[in-house]
Image 1 (tube, rainbow, N blue to C red):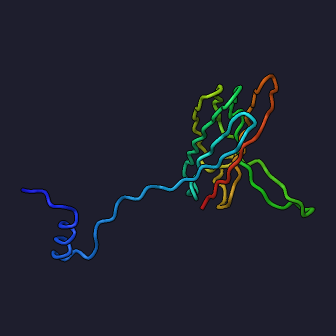
Image 2: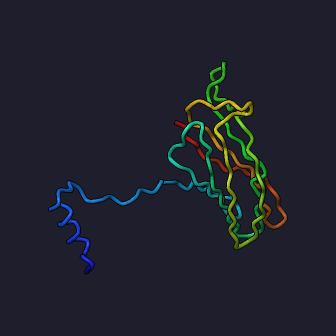
Image 3: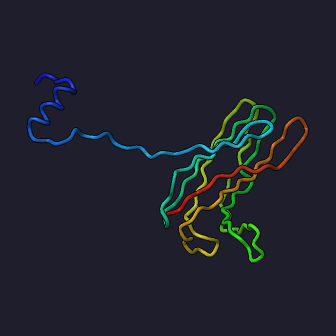
Length: 156
């Protein structure tokens, strides 16, 4: 049987009673949240929202332009709100397991963090926006500093 062009297939489908052309598969949209460091950057890839009770997977890329960057040394999920005095406050929800990598000048490495959307006691957290805060060590020409990179995780 000869192959028909896509336009001819659409006309044939409509003639046979189909009311719409097939739609292509959708891919999940993600966003890269970059944090510039003195000697490189950290890129945290997040989705617009995550489902409660699911396991959240967060890819993190580390790029060093000079010296080296090691991390994440620590990864914390934080909740923010207002304390009794009316000032902003942050509360630790959960420390995530990390396996730090060291990235040297001109290189890029990636790690993946996971969170089961539970707090430190194992209870599923309520729907809200949570902060993911990563600690990184930047070594640049003899100066060593601990810096942070952060992104928001929206749970629905």
